[in-house]
Image 1 (cartoon, rainbow, N blue to C red):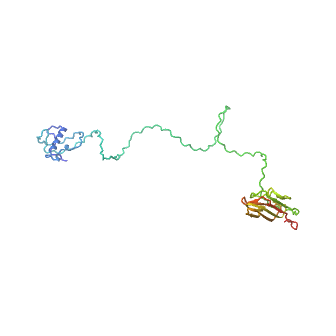
Image 2: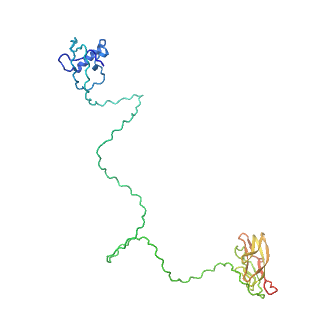
Image 3: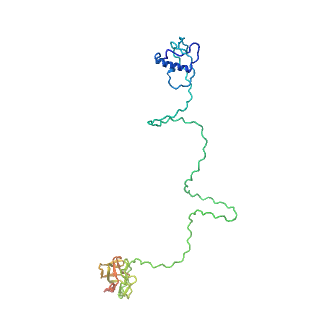
Length: 345
């Protein structure tokens, strides 16, 4: 910026710097006479409107200007043509930090907002800190799994002498199974057990000699109603059984000789359905079914039997065992008829 034609410079050999009061008075004079001084003629030190800073160091002295005319204004003179602007002086040192200002007052319509965070600072490069104190002891850990059994160590040498027995030690681990020992002496024979169930019928034997003189017959009556299933019905009341071929304790007839036999039964039915059959060696030969609530049923059959064959009567199940014990419930057998050539049939 060009300086005004007038400048406030020392006159003559007096090189002392003007005081701050003289500069203010000079600037005030220029402000009170606006007509005679244009804005571009106002010196730079009269245009600064900011806060007054600290006094900077004295700049270098510019070249001596031409001698001006004497100003009629006492103590203040205007230099006639203003000399060229000198070079800018060196920057003064920064001033000391001023005191903290008062807190600002926010209006009712003013809303405060947090400013953006500042940039991260440079990481510190301080020395390594001292070792910290030991922390508290942690909680006990989870018990580990049981390890594998180690090998048996060598037997230790005992050089001790007999002394007082020590405290009994803890029970050791179970040892390995030893070798099987020798068989001991035979024990005493136990008591005889109960009689077992009747076994299955064996194979048929060879035909025996013909015995036409043997006449086998029997007749027996029922004494217990509703007999159990899956077993021979026991006709325990004996009417005739001289030869003893019928067993009243088991309800089974055994053929004494080879021949042809005639069997018949007469049964009383009461309250239950009756399903009954005559069996020869576990094979049903004839079956009878009677659904009467009260009545009788009869059956007759001729069979050929070898010596040792067995015959009995058996009901089907507990629901169809309506056989009632009465005077009419009879099982009997007539003697076989001998053949003409002396054999049996």
